[in-house]
Image (cartoon, rainbow, N blue to C red):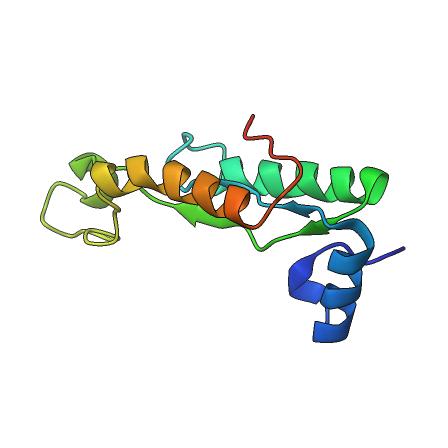
Length: 119
């Protein structure tokens, strides 16, 4: 089966795939709690799988997943006794709000032909 994951390609393979199709899929999403039954990366794990299926069916390359974390709930980061994890890795809401506009700007500037941000 043809490689579509950017992370699995050598430089010459990536350049050939870009020349051939000119399509790059960018899976992105939040790394946030989804209850005790799902991983924190559920959003971008699903997005990555869907993008890989699309690339196999329609051509193109799947960029490395772009995930960020904005969950600022103390009960997620702290056990209530001051013992926390991931306490300082959250991305501020202002920064998260600016990510899509910058992303869309770069997509237009690099003449990407199609973009779908439905999750």
